[in-house]
Image (tube, rainbow, N blue to C red; front, side, top):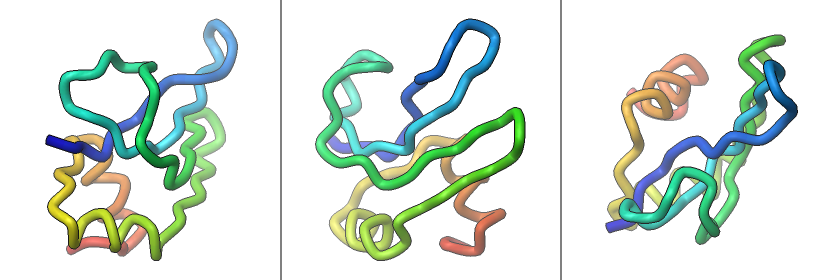
Length: 78
């Protein structure tokens, strides 16, 4: 099953996250199927590829709890 979740990038104590479509059993920083955006929690900056996200959600990809809350704040899902 594919999931929409965050993968950590950045330096120590300065995290940034990529929003990726990935197999649910893959490790956190494993190889993604597709990259659909990023989120920086320090500056609250985010960029999402809305068309790709909506396409993956229509194909049945389940977002993680954290990703779902980010997408709700960005008004991409209800």
